Length: 68
Image (cartoon, rainbow, N blue to C red; front, side, top):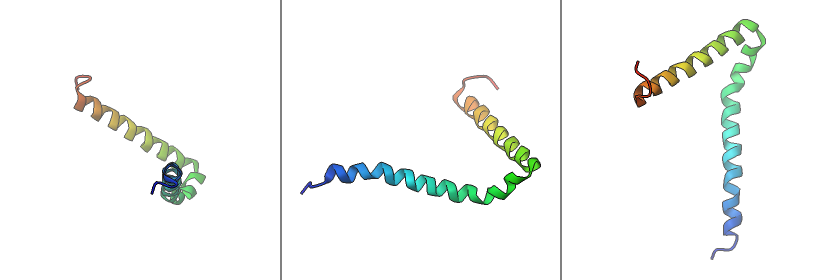
């Protein structure tokens, strides 16, 4: 009944990693042409940094770590 159970379970991490990589490649493939111009690279870096700061400040305010 449990022939190859652990072998089957050991395949799940590989499936998860390949699925995640496929999703990420499909998300970022349309942005590849944007990375050819320095102006758009700077804009994308600015958007990334500002979104990380926004999430950080929002989480700090929600968790009460620092007064806002």
